[in-house]
Amino acid sequence: MADNYLERKYQEYQSQKSSATKSGYGKKKTTPTHKMRRVFVTGGADGIGKTIVKAFRMAGHRVAFCGRNEESGKETAEKTGTTFYHVDINNKEALENCMRHILEDWGDLDIIINNAGISKFASLTETSVEDFDQTLSANLRPAFITSRLLAIHRQSQTTPNPYGRIINISSTHYATNRLSSEAYAASKSGICSLTQTLAMSLSPCHTTVNSIIPGWIQADDYDQIDPETHPIPFSGRMGKPEDITRICLFLCQEENDFINGENITIDGGTASRLHDHH
Image 1 (cartoon, rainbow, N blue to C red):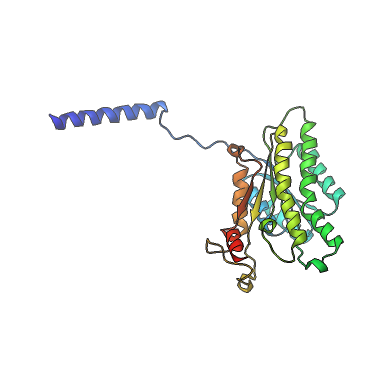
Image 2 (cartoon, helix red, strand yellow):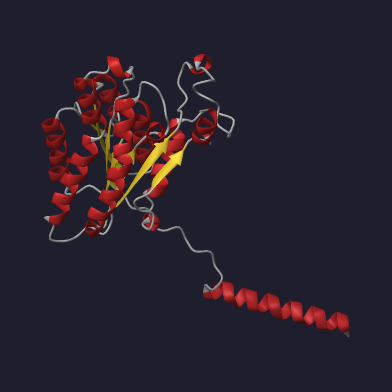
């Protein structure tokens, strides 16, 4: 009798399971329909920016990018089906005209990734005031310019865009004591502060603003890196551009709109080792 009872209950369970499946209850939710976003990347002709351009295009988005390396920019655009603008980010008018052209052509921008920047390192006495100004102009000012233009454009729209993302690329230099990096550290620290303020200012435009703080990114001459100044992260390897790109894609997912005003460090644990080292 016990065996028959268990068999009967099992058959009832199977019957209920089958009915639930036919009715749709218990089915796995289908993946939401992919939405093509309009993306603008500064400094997208080389390095991390180039990897970001390729990744967002492969994800099915419409991508425009700017950079100073005209040869590399044109080649990347041709291979990926993206749009390249030859722009020196130190030239305020050139960057503003680039942004305006994209906004007029596309109607709006959904994602801006402020990646462009320079990294000049020299001792304090060998860094001129002009060098300091140029570094801040290249690393900090473009993020303000693109964010400001997006805010002006969004406020002029009759139909609000319910989606927006701005991602600023900073550096672990902003928080580590390193010689000969006054200008660079100041500019990257400024990015982190600017990010948090922009997050408040752009909230009425339905746009989140976050920054990514990369640690050491693996270069071609990795074997020549001095382990005293470039310690291997706890993760056991150097960073790769793809490590940064994956976080950019994650932050741009529609459901991640509650991540806002954050400065996200991606360095494999390098920062903590640097603090221990010093």
